[in-house]
Amino acid sequence: MKTPTWDELREFLKHDNWEQDRATGHDFFEKTLPDGEILRTHASRSGSKTMSPGRFKAILSDQLRLSEAEFWEVLRTRTPAPRPSPAPEPAPLSLPLWLAQALELEVGLTRDEIAALDEAEARRLLVESRSKPKV
Image 1: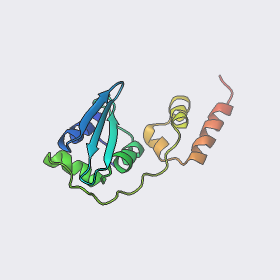
Image 2: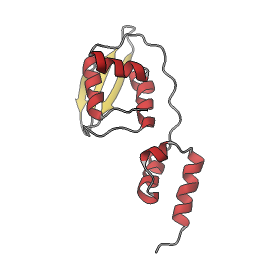
Image 3: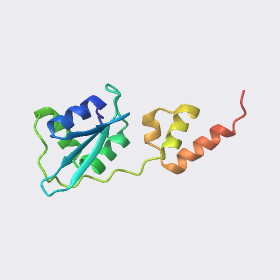
Image 4: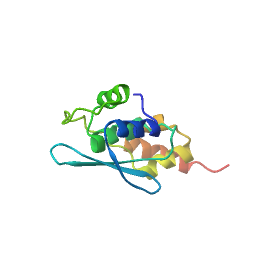
């Protein structure tokens, strides 16, 4: 799965007519759908960094309420996504942030390797790594 950079997400929000709500460490956006439902999302200021496939799927289903194809179509055509949109596939359950960070920092796994793990396997790898004697 191709994942966007944070700049591409911001470009999507611009073309899909989201409005910036506030800015802190991240920038927060809102979009009011024709039925009155308000969608909310935020974007990191990490510009050219890409997000993990799991995070992208979660943002699509939980915040943008679009499919991956619709997201890329908005960027390609620079026109808003048609609303309402068919419900996207629910995002797979992802690992707790602390566990993903520990696997990356302590075990040395890549984000793609971490995204492919279920929680039981991730915990097993972390325990195994922490059980090894320090050299």
